[in-house]
Image (cartoon, rainbow, N blue to C red; front, side, top):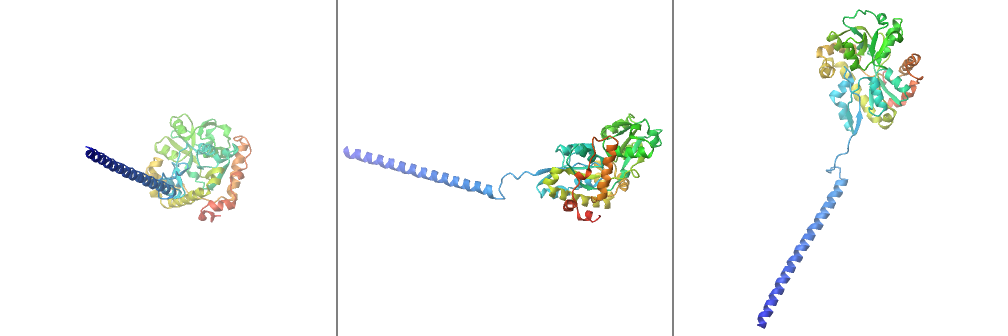
Length: 362
């Protein structure tokens, strides 16, 4: 019996020892796997933090907001061709194209940090400067006065600007329509106070004009051509002989100081689009037919109204813009005298952002 007991105890100890060994071996294996896994995880994490090809979320691009053009312009071409989007993507920027009714609304947004680059006629920047906005003139264009017209209803008895005395004339306040109305009235021996000014943004003015609620409307293309095609209005006078100013591209002082490389890229790509638009009227018409809501043949004819290509900022441009500001002040349309020079850069600053072929025109 004693011998049997010893054998049993010996067997139990052997089984216990085997279980202990198996447990110890299993624990060590699990611990080793855990340590190895943790080590690999740590190395992977370190590589993700340092490797440029890591699976981390890509850096979010900054946004540059450039006004959308719905006219027969190189700016509209620039958006449709997508060349600027590609150029600015390499600088870490994404382009957005917000829409605005007219120039004054653009510059309100520019001053409120809702827009980065605007495209307007001569008057909106003056009104903006008068309101204290830190605006910067970036580039200018040809006058293109043929594309702006004073419309009257197609069956209106009015045959001359002089006959507008006492009539209701719609236009966007502080716009090219406002400025050219002043010029047209002065040419007819009238003043702005001789007509009833009806301040309406283009979409609202379009409705009012179509419904016969105003006697005339000073507006730009494509509104002019669409109105003629629908036999709603006819041109009383266009801006070819009235206009002595040009359009401007502008930005805020803050955006110019923070992103001169973006502005330089924008102007370079815009000038390329200007030259393409000049030499490809049919292709431009095909590209912008959906934008303007006009057919290709009509747009090809409209193309003849325009000159394309940026112009350099010169002292003559600044002097003329000052005349515009002085005119608005003399008419009591702005609350204080404006020194437009505050919004222009130095020649050295323009040389850094303006395309070389544009500067060569000086």
